[in-house]
Image 1 (cartoon, rainbow, N blue to C red):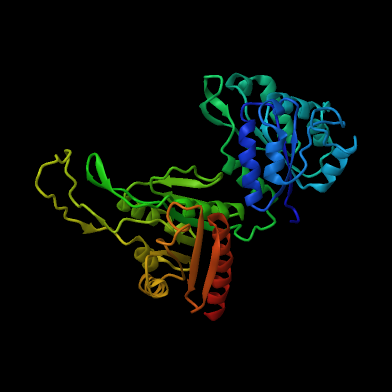
Image 2: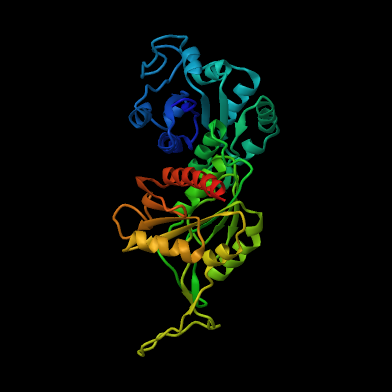
Length: 407
């Protein structure tokens, strides 16, 4: 857990409820999380929620008896908390907290902790648009950034006050990703350019219908996030999904197999690692009608042509790049993975049974078999897709060293 001890400071705003999800997400990524709440934050979320999620004491005041939750054993606990933790994440960071931090005010536990904290600080502001755009808030953020604080800017959207604009708390995954990058002791992908394909493709039948598959894109997005967290420049070529691109990743959105093919080839020469995790449609209609096909009582037949084989083309064009393919199978897992590796000129194939309950398509977890060009096979047991992503890159880097040593 070295370098993975975090304080989550929760400010008093409507976005405080999202801090519970953030605490859980940070823990999933290996952080031990202790929560500190301002008095105002307790009006939105009860301390018991965070205590139950984290298994840690929730600090709610500077002195014992400050609040109904008498959680302090010492009035100098802000010093020990500051010393015992490596990262302070404040989410939501309200305008009031930003002002206190910037000007050294310390009238509650969180602001006092900030002054005593010597580790890294990550601020995730959330507030009304007018407050976010006020010159005082901008000046306070400039001061805090100059002092070394990292900031995850708020998103643009509909706010609780009914206005539309910047000020909504950033997505929890983006805040957690920023925390992970801030604390990352691993920079083993620094200097690499990683190209990841993710999600399904949609192949039109007519202007309103299309053929697709069940891919959610979660595995590909986890791979992109993991690579970025380890220092890589990441290009994410994604089919249509309901996911937000990880912070710092270059997103190239596409819809069809032909569009994904063109996007991959446009970037392939600048990459050092190619990870083809997208579930690309195998067939498409070559001549899509310009008008909607009307329903009749007659049977309708579709003439389908093969889509371009993106993995095979990447295998033909690759030079010194490491090429990782995916094999989503329902049977003969090992045989199909080895066949794909040989026919597509892959260096590694990540194979999984998509009909296995609890893993594969649409799931948050996966269980895969890594088949290597060296002849080695490694079974990765069921884990979160984010954990699987890191393990894939761990083995990919070892594989590349082995392949270079064999040349």
